[in-house]
Length: 478
Ligand code: AMP
Image (cartoon, rainbow, N blue to C red; front, side, top):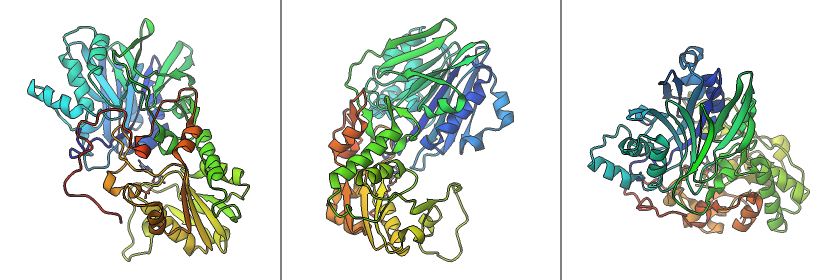
């Protein structure tokens, strides 16, 4: 999809359940655990007697489902989806899973990632008569499968998916199987687990392992890049998508997106973030922070890196900013303007920790710079004598076209400003970023092969015009 369609920014999470007596509840809880991957719509499709039952809606998982709807989602298998989109395309037609009746039976599909050649495929499909309901790239997959002449769904999937470029981690439910599929470059995570039940093992798949912890599933393995894995009445199976490409797993999953209690691409996110903090301290321990009084994280995303930083720099770690965890998506604004209300309702710096101190503030990433600017101003208001900002990732210089909501280049402060200009904009005494080598060292697991395009501008696929600058409606730095 083009950015003008406003759909390539979707962030999402997917789950799947097979052979569980409470499939809808397992899917619901799994979605609950990965709610951070998308907060604007949620949906579950289950399989009952060869047919699909579906419930989806706008809102959080807990808002979309209740006991009654989960009871109605009968069956022993299901898939689920949570979705976030930033660009006003928050309509029901784009809520997932998408479901259709095809010649090979009912097929439901839940997708995390963005297909970069979706526009091209969409135009081809439209020319051949396909009718599209929403604006998301996932519909292309359904149409490609629908148009494929083979009665064998696995063959349809293999040949349809080989046409796609970009990121897709999918869960697919047919009338007889649950599929878990990852694009050949393995951009987004997808993992397989098992729950022992009285009637034999139930299979579960999810974007992140934290879902397995909640539902008592054992982690089995990740779906390999380019793998079509499925389970049916005969057991589990696996084939490959016939397209070769080097592994390009998203490094930003480790930097910010995934939950720290997940194992992503074979490595603990908590550990990689803490290690990033350690390396950051090592890289810059002599530049203004060696004798600081206190290291504080921007909660929650900066916490593991700040712990690592404080340990390495041998400085005290304190919670200098307290986060309110009970903020809904809307709150009633005060009639009279309160200074910094927007950020204060979420993050409140405490004078008890900050007053008169030389403070190092650690955050996971800096994108527009507007959050850091507000935080630093509040930390100063709370009495900090010096504020040194350290970012546990390199400067963000490029948008993501593979499923993370990074804004377009004109809004990325590091794409257009020098380090000194950014420091001046955010109002810090000093500012340093983790080097790209440092980040790669922090995330180096057994698998390797990362996409770091948001930090180095090296996109591992063609972009099919997605990188053309949109006309109008570009917000400047606030
Ligand atoms: P800013 O520099 O004001 O754009 O805000 C950067 C902060 O937003 C980072 O410290 C992250 O904690 C958070 N962040 C980074 N990427 C994203 C994203 N894709 N969606 C939501 N928040 C993000």
